Image (tube, rainbow, N blue to C red; front, top):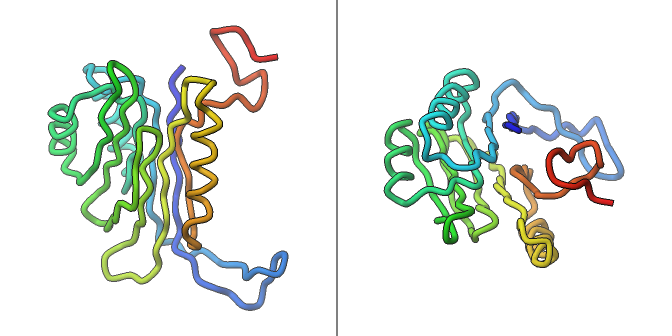
Length: 186
C-alpha cells in the first residue's frame, strides 16, 4: 500500500488577542514550507524514482523525508543531485531501513541529530527569523525494540521549544482498520 503525506508549515506570528489553555494562539500567513513524508520501501527502482519525481513536480515540497530507502550512499548522492536538492542520509542496516532528508535550496536546514530511526533538524527560510523544528521518524519494525525508539522520540520532544512537526512512518497501528496484509493486532 502506497501512502505519502504532505504538510504545510506556515510561518507563525503571535496574536495576543487569542488565548488557548493559557498559551498564546498564533495566526498563519500564507507563507509556507511544504513537507513530503513517504515510506518508499526502497528508492532504488525506476518506479519509486518516477513516483518521487511526480510528487516533487505536483506538490513542490521544500523538504522531503523518505524512510525505508534501502539505498547506498552512492544512490543517495545521485538522487540528491538529480533533484537538485541538499540532503542527509542515514544508511541502511544490512538490507533494510535507511532514511533520507532532502530539502530545496530555498530553505536553510540545520541538522541537530540523527539515528537509524530519525533525523531531527531546524528549518527556516533564509532571511526570516521564524524557525521550525522538523523530525523525520521511522518507527522500529522490531516490536521488542519499539519502546526504546518511542522513549527517544519523547526525549526529542522535550529538547527544544519551537513549532515542531514530526512526520514519518511510526510503525504503529492505532486502529484495527488501518492494518492490511499480515494478521491484525488484537
